[in-house]
Image (spheres, rainbow, N blue to C red):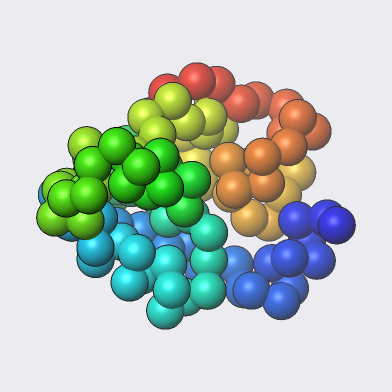
Length: 111
């Protein structure tokens, strides 16, 4: 399946959450939007991480109290973004990092 097809169904809107929000709030967001991951952005809208269902499950396996912890405690911090620092790549009408595709010519590591 191509990202283009997924976005045609799900829509191109990027769902974000601040790192200070609780994991419980993030799970509610995932469920309400029927998505498997949410972008974690700081107060200035900068990408600081991503929280996936897998991140939540790994943390819950070790800590039953994870749902009260901040998202920033368990999110994946090692996220790739467009090197140009724009949210879109010239080859894609949607964010490169969302496509998780090697075809984007200018991905770099970090936020």
